[in-house]
Length: 454
Image 1 (spheres, rainbow, N blue to C red):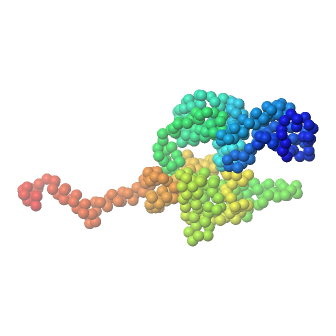
Image 2: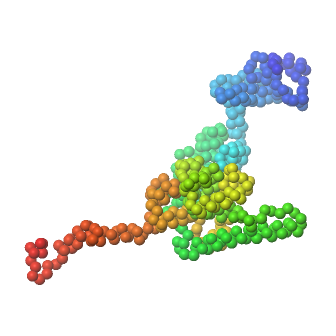
Image 3: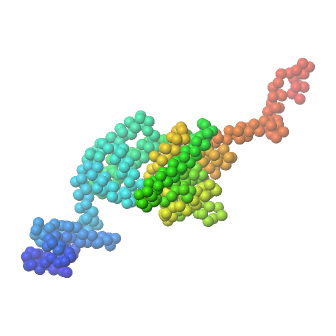
């Protein structure tokens, strides 16, 4: 409906409420309109279309707060913004955001809704900011001291023994938060812009160059490790039997039995896949069934670049153990269209510390982390005479220098290579060394210098 919006129209009694809201557009100024609610309330609006053809509107004010002439002036100002490429709704929203002074408010009301629907790690990013920087939450988001505070805080954390990689991840998460705030107009500049990561060695996932594998310090480590895993499996089966017995006595529906399935939950299959493919924990969390090629003559697991640490897709062959594990896990999984190891609510997992910690504690493993199963994978390959470059490709290392940390696991082979140079029947170098020894031995009685030289 179109009419000239003015005092005459407002007082005419023509704008009667209807069963549903409706709009009356002005005949002179494009986009200027009045919206009438079923309750009888009316408000001025400005409606417009963006360059991407998206339709949007901005509320100017209730009709009883501005005269039609005043509302028209506001609408003309908004129209001018659209002509100049400015989205009035975005501009108004940014002004509103600027009034929300604290980091905590902006985090909850603006950043959380966006990041949790945009990034898989969104929920973890919000939790990281709140747990690592609790003193920042009540500070104004425009505070000029954030850079100094972050530099001070990361120095304190270094002294406390935290790894540089961990500190860098925390800072990067906060830095991304401030970048979002800048984009939304809440702050003019990102206070952490230009702040460099702490200097650390060029390696894969850790600050140190450690190599830790099962059986490294104690030949029974691997036995205890698997005993702990099987013990956990049996406990969970027994707990399910007990629970179902209790429910049967009360004539309640029983839970599915765990006696007939290969795994009681995600932990054992995840461990088996990690030990036999070397995939990183976060890569494992993000794997989907579509990444597994079961039907090829050489089955493979594909780590897509979107979840790979170095953003490059790689393909890892599946051996008998990893292939059987994945097939068995798939056969008992309810949903085989998405994630291989989803969380209880179907989303991507973010942590398995409690379950993993129980295994490590029960097996009495010293300083053995989830990531060390990746070291175990690489170490066992090297000890089985697999070439280092092949190990590098399987692990997805960018540089050979990272893979070289495992080179020392072939000490006998390296020693044999050096020793072979001294075998005279095989090496002309060995014979050359012997000639030098002959030249420099002391002269025996009866030998003169000329005979010695010949």
